[in-house]
Figure (tube, rainbow, N blue to C red):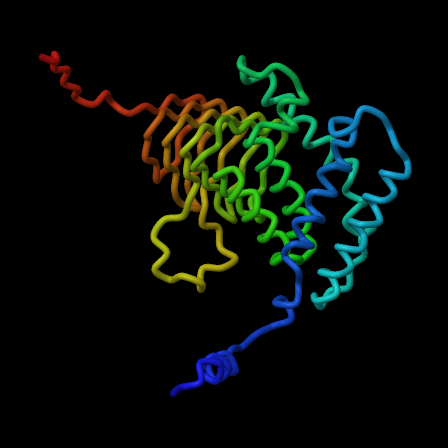
Length: 266
């Protein structure tokens, strides 16, 4: 009888593994949660507790050191944390954008603690810093954690401006080389993707995803593809639009109404 253990060992011994497998994904998620709590401590707690803040910082530092040691570039927790104030300011502007743009929203705290769009945005902004530091695996784990929680898939390599508003969120996809300006609103089911990827990995590093300029609104189900595609500022992209070429500033893109037949029930 075949020893199943030997089959497994024989197979995995051929794997070309790397040090990344030694990184605890749970530790990365803990780091993300700790940083998020530190960024919005005043939304998670009713009073300032210096010991609690220090414990969060030290735990985040410990988690950072555990995963950063497996990368060639030597980085410290301070290298990451120097972005704290800028990150807080950016995320606060996102909170304002969501609150101002959603009549169903009752408070800033509701945005921070309950809105899936903001959960995805906060994970993206934290992961984007790690991505730019060269910790791309760590950044990816955070973005995919947010993806699993919210249904929003934002690659940490994307570049996104201030006052970003995601409403509802489910099904949104934003690719690695996408560039999004400030005061942009995106609704559920939007894809900002790449055109045919027949060349696959050979396209790494090339601009594959669209550019969205300032003050653009993209409604549900719209799909915009291609690295050369630019959506001009102050434009509105209607639901279910399929776009593979650039749109001028101040444009309204809409899909012609479908033929709908209404039949009276008997």
